[in-house]
Length: 284
Image (cartoon, rainbow, N blue to C red; front, side, top):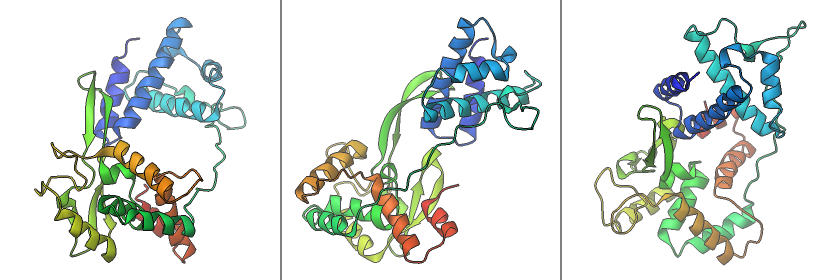
């Protein structure tokens, strides 16, 4: 079997709005599976649930097995809708009705958050740099992902051209910020558009930052690289945060994503409910 079915599946998932990162993960994992099929002298259409179980044993880590099985479920589900198979081996059951290939359970850990003392020290240290100060407040009080704020750039596989392409997300653009209403237009995972809320203090800081920008057209990013005006990206943000932790005298390892955890945790601690937290996090 060639990779035409895999490419068609990726095209279908792209049309559904799946993120470029998800598509690339499926592509890599399923290509590994197709190579295994060739080595075992069988085709995906003839692979049984028991043979798939043998394949998944190649991966000792539960998280890795879960990722590969999730890809196989997508792949075989797509082949069934295309009429290439009758029975989906990833959904086969035992005599007691249980799945032969259940998704491995991953023990979930409580999200790590930034303490009130650490938060105060970081904000105090950031006040000398307006950009960094705005970055921290957007993540802490609007709950944005880092890529949604500063943008990111990565190389991904495009199933239409079957080539690796440079993919760039701009992060927050000036036209995405409504200071009067306190609303942000956010493009999240898979470029899904949604809204986030902006508090007055952060809005005032953003207004100050905008007046310092050399490029102030609607589609220009809020966090601009000097020179070409492109989005600064996650590497810049990670570097700034690492330096800020050093200045603040914080020895514990902190990450930028912990701001998002902190935003949601503090919301729940102050009486918010889980359904509202899910909406604020923009989780499906």
